[in-house]
Length: 152
Image (cartoon, rainbow, N blue to C red; front, side, top):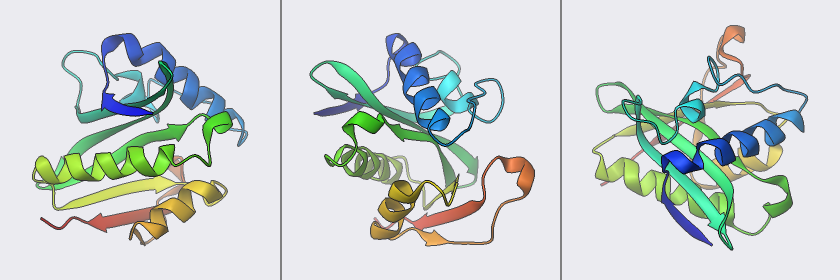
């Protein structure tokens, strides 16, 4: 397994991972709005400051993006791992690298929104110290909010 910065050639593979992942929860990816961070993966002039992918044997199996929100606060978007590859530590490794990159970028806090039905992801966030906050508004496309204070 390797974790690396996303390239433009990773865009379609990342979209496929996200589409498949969301479909397993009865959700449809929308790369123009709610899933725009992954829609922009690897492209020039993207609002994403951090874009990472996970590969196993040369196949893209996971992705995520981080965007600056306000000041030193950033938000994690599009964190997904192919369901057939879950349970192998890929998500933990990918998310841990994202957190390390956020510290290097001088962010002091990461935020994310997710679904409570995404139990494996929720468990991973909580095991890494993410704290649940007030639930997001329904139009956010999620039903849970988490934040992580970053320590240098």
